[in-house]
Each structure stands twice: as structure tokens, then as C-alpha cells.
Amino acid sequence: MSAQPNQSIIHGIICLQTLAASPVPVGCRELARQVDLPVMTVNRILRTLMYMGMVVQNEKKSYLPGPAIHVLAAQSIHGSELMNRALPVIENYLPVNHIVSVGVLWGDKVSYLIHALPEHSFSQSLLNNHLFDVTQSTIGVMLLSRMKDEEILQLLGNERFDEVKEPIDFARINGYASRVHSSPQERTIAVMLDEKNHAAIALSRLHIRDENELEASLKSLYELRDKIIGQ
Image (cartoon, rainbow, N blue to C red; front, side):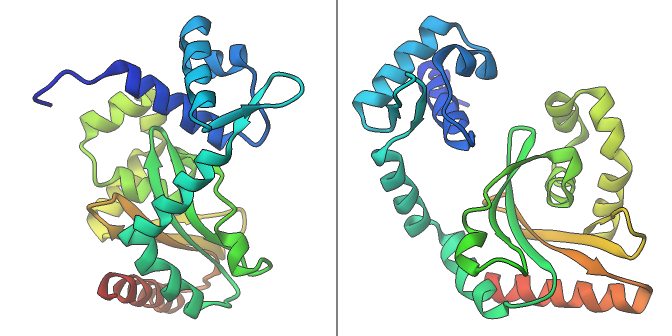
């Protein structure tokens, strides 16, 4: 970077993202622990965010997303070229008997922008925005495969990097990431969707018995990706 990063802005965004990702309201001290910042710093950030309407306090003085963050979320989706391309294509692709996901990397986590399960409505696929450890996510492995080993080591450390080194190498060689689950026939496959936005797309809960079925599933995934890219 040509200029020194503004740490106050960085800390404010980290606090806001961490709070928005929490399934329950979070107190100031707990949030400070989660983001590894002084309590006084986090308290000042939260007061500023509350002044802006980005967060509110409940009766227990814990913090949760406020009305302004919902406006920001709507503006973000409306302004996202990726989401505007992906949403109609995936909606037309459904229903299917497997899971369709689109995810991006956030630190050492994967955030799922779309997570469409067969048993849920399409609108619910936008509300399943949980964070997953990147080492436990096939989309995460695909995204890591686009990074240099030095960058991955800095992000994960030696032990966690060793856990995913083999699947990362597989993704680099083959152009897709693959994970076999508890059942040998159940698999997840993922490919890059958008290099600019560092997004990947995956099909999960696939019951694949042989190479022919794997090739057919990969073909479906590539076709889905190409339709999104071509929109």
C-alpha cells in the first residue's frame, strides 16, 4: 500500500463485522476479547456505531445490529455485481437434491453469501450466512489454492496449513477442490466463481459412486458457474 492503513477504520469495521456475524447480542468486554482490542477502544467504537445507528443496545446493555446496518446490507446486495449475477441463475437452478453454495474468504473463515439447502426455501439460502473455519470448507480450500503458500502460512500458521496442504495442492493441479464426507459416497466439490471478488461456488451433499458420476457433477458445476459468469 502507498499509504499507511488507518487502524481506527480497520478496528471499527472488524468490530462491526464481528458483531454482525454473532448469532447473539454481545457485550463490550466480550467483543473486545473476540477482536483482541482494549475494552476502552471497543467501547469508543461501539458508542460511535450506536450514534450512526449501526448498532443498538438491548435491555442487558449488550450490542446487536441496528437499523443502519440493514440499510447497508441491502445497499451492498443491490450494488454487488456478483450477487446480481448469481441470484437469478441459482434460483432457476433450484430445486435440486443437493446443496448449492457461494462463499468468500473473510480472514481465516468462509462466509457463505448463498447457502441453498434442499429442505429450505430460496429466501432462506440468503439467511444461512454462518462463518466456517476455512480449513473445514471445500470453498475455503478452493480460495486458499489461489493464494501463495507464504500467505496461507501467515493466515493459518504451520499446524492448520499442514491440515489443508494436500487438498490445496489437489485443487491447484485439478482446478477444483473436493472433500469426501463421513460417507464415502457423499462429496462436496468447488470451483472458483469470481477471481476479482475471491468467490467460489460449490455443490454439496452429492452422492457420487464412481468417476462417471464425479465427471457429471463437475460438468453441472462448471455449467452453473459459466451461466453466472455469462450473465
